[in-house]
Image (cartoon, rainbow, N blue to C red; front, side, top):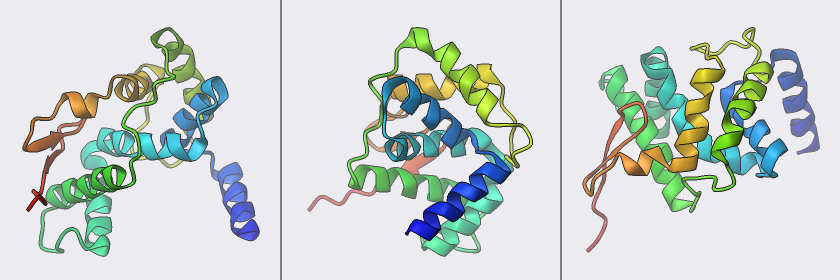
Length: 168
């Protein structure tokens, strides 16, 4: 584990960090939110925000995870993967919000995250501080839950997840 942690740190220092980590770091720095928790809450929001740019990659992950078929469209595979992430969050009782966030802090937090997420990092979509603010508002207000009804889950980028009824 020590070697793995070292290698991960070396990789981050050479390749910069993506938006999930940058936003998570700013939350940890300002509010002492544990980094792993912040990453777990933020991941689906950032993946959804990347939109069609990553549908192919998410589809391949969905096939590897057994939640989609290779014959599915990339969009359907991406939707299946994002739904699987949301389902895992529910099963693991990962909160949907980070209640420590204060609206008046969001512009400064977003600027901090923008500076950390160097544009040289190979992200599929470049975002400025104004776009990064949306992630803070999403996890502060729980946009995911606000946009769903009893049968479906609609994520921040319009990803629709059909809920499976597991009750008796």
